[in-house]
Length: 134
Image: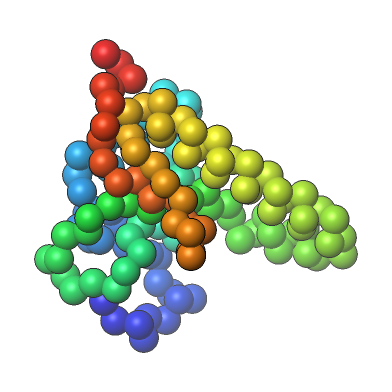
């Protein structure tokens, strides 16, 4: 996709627009719903964000899904505006803890999840176990 997008006006791509594997997206959404975690409609929104790592051309399907936890920019802005690096640090630590717990929950939901050694992104590679509803 184009790298010249105006990010101030861009709302981010949906999983469908990113050509993410439908079976993985459905299982991720199922696990998140069981945990009452919101899944972001677009990867730039707050919630469990689904994305793809590589640059792609429209119609080129992804091999896997990256997952992350997004919070509102307003929350980080508030922590910074309060003049406390400690609060921003606590928020970043909570952010990391939620992502770690999410990766573990997805594994228990029958998905193979690995952390990319270079980017440190969480990658959902395949369904390798039964549905949590089975």
